[in-house]
Image 1 (cartoon, helix red, strand yellow):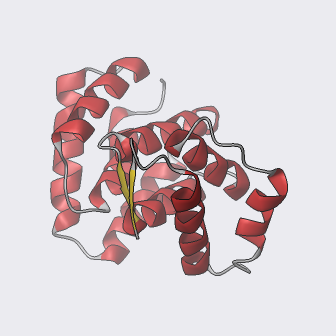
Image 2 (cartoon, rainbow, N blue to C red):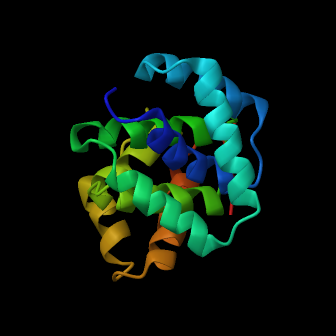
Image 3 (cartoon, rainbow, N blue to C red):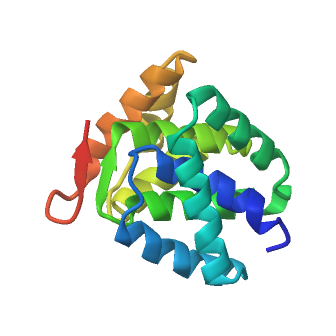
Length: 172
C-alpha cells in the first residue's frame, strides 16, 4: 500500500474507537491487516493504539476531523481496501454494535465509498451466505431519505435480519 501508515491507522482507529474498546480480537485483526497492507505490524499496532487512545479523550468533532483529514490523504485506488480492513477489524470479535455501524458508514463517507457498496460490504461480512435482494439494499438506503441516523438504524436492522446468531451478535 502506498498510502502512509499514519493515515490508514487513523481511519482504522476511528472504526475501532466506536465501541470504546480495543480488544484482543481487534488487535489480532490489526496485526494481520498490517502485514497484508505491507506495514510493519508492531509499528502499525502502536499507531492504532495511539489513535484509539487519543480518540477516547477527544470530542466527536475532533475525531471526525481526524477521519476527514486522514481519509482525504489516502490514495483513491486504496480507499476500498482500507474500508474493507475497517469492517474486518470491527467484526473480528463477532459482535457489532449500533455505534460501530455508525462509524463504519462515516468511514465509508469520508473515503468517498458509494453508500450502497459500503452497506453491501458490511452485510457480506456479517453473513457471506445471506442472499440480499438488490431492491432491499436500495430500499434500506433510500428509505433513510438522506438522514444518516436513520440509515444507521436501517443497516443495523438489516444486519440483525441476516446474521447467524450462532456465530454473530448484533447489539442495537
